[in-house]
Amino acid sequence: MGDWVDNTPELFRSLPEGMVVDRLNDKRAPARETPETPNASTASVSDSTRDSGLKAILKNSLRPFLRLLTETPDKNYGWAKLAAKRGSFLAKEHNAQLVFSSGPPHSTHLAALAISKQCKIPMVTDLRDPWGRKPWKNHDNPLRDYVLPWYESRAVRGASQVILNTESSLIDFQKHYPSQSSKFSCIPNGLDAHLVDQVATLQKQPSSHPFPVFIHPGNLYGHRDPVPLIKAVAKLRDQGKRIAFRQVGSIDPHYNTEAIVEELGLQDQVFIEPPMSHGHVLQAMRNSDALVIIQPDAPFMVPAKVFEMMAFDQPILSVSDSPCTEAIVRRSGGACAPSRDVEGIAASIEKILDMLSSPELQAARDLARTTYDAKRLTGQLALVFNRALS
Image 1 (tube, rainbow, N blue to C red):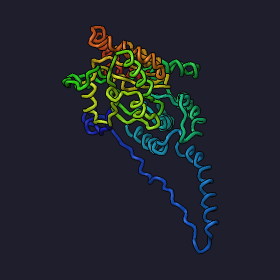
Image 2 (cartoon, helix red, strand yellow):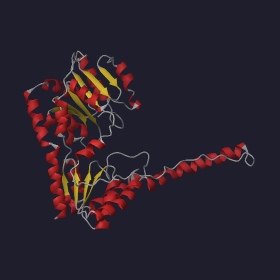
Image 3 (tube, rainbow, N blue to C red):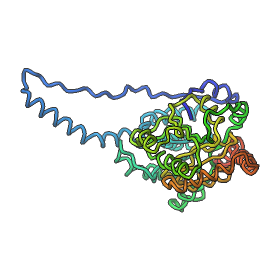
Image 4 (cartoon, rainbow, N blue to C red):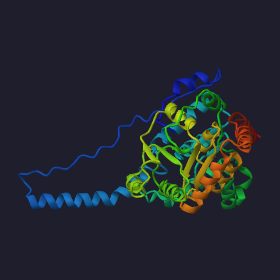
């Protein structure tokens, strides 16, 4: 949520004594394309044009294969090769007992696999997003999708333990790798207690909107389409029920959102605002009446923002197609609707309005903060490490 902030110095200060941190940068010079300029003294204009066209066709034809070789499993593959070499050295120097990888980027798991084999130590792999059987396609490197299952299988079979972050992902991996099912476990994302404390210090400011304010903090791109939600706002308006919707962050232009807002006559209810710093986003969320998640077409994923929103007291509206997201939102105090179901979204907004300031909401939120406490979940990670070493 909000602009990216480098909190590395603060993170380093919080590390326990005796922990060694080695930061590896990929210092290779990026490849540069140098345009070919034909020699005017030996080539005619027509020859130059034809030559340039042939080179362009050849370059376009080879680009998918070059990307397959240099950007698979992802664009961090070059870094991962360096990390494997450096990591093996550090593991031997410090007598490491275990190697742990967390991704994406999923090339990190290949680096950990190389270290595990080189140093003969167990590997724990933490898959935060789908990898080899992800539900979306990569348009920049389409050939990559054909080989990702092989990379995923190598990492899974080479690991002593594999962590998934949703129950849906856990079930999916157990079905796909039945012979490996005993090594899979689920540890969800969590909520840091310091964020709860930080939010508690924020004072709610008077609203400039006459209606309850729903806010979505974050950019909308890919399949994250806000239009069904906007249409649901219009539907409720036509029924005499009004809310304000604040979108904080950029929206992919192909959704044509501003034109749709104008067409529906929602200029006084829908507000599209540029990205803010993290601190300002937190204050904007504190000022709102409800928090919104938009996550279509990701049945195995739970957005990290769901857990951040648990630090607030407002109900959460989930506009998604993820059963695991819906289960967490409902347990935490919220309502859910499929991402393209305008009537369903409108009905869920009405449920949210009924929840405002209810004691049931506060009880659900308190329970969620305990259930998804990051420190408690870290204890589960320690148990997985112990299993890998046993």
